[in-house]
Length: 121
Image (spheres, rainbow, N blue to C red):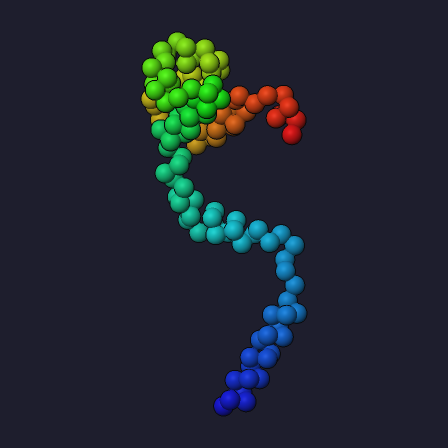
């Protein structure tokens, strides 16, 4: 019995050693995260309220304002700081967004506030 177990163990180790890794090793993660229902895993972060918080934090940080200064800021001044009509509407409108709309808004948030040197890098 021990001899059979050792033989099986050696054969399996030989198979594992000889097996080549696939070219695109990330395929496992794609299957796990998008193929078996894990797309709902990050649903919490897809809420417009959370995305709005990220945008407002980014505005506050890029303008080097403290939380108290930012909270006391008038809406007109905030709109002037952002200077993007889509992002301004996103902040002040409370409505349901489709998934593709949220993706577009997130892309605009990533691009907003970048300088030319950051965009080139």
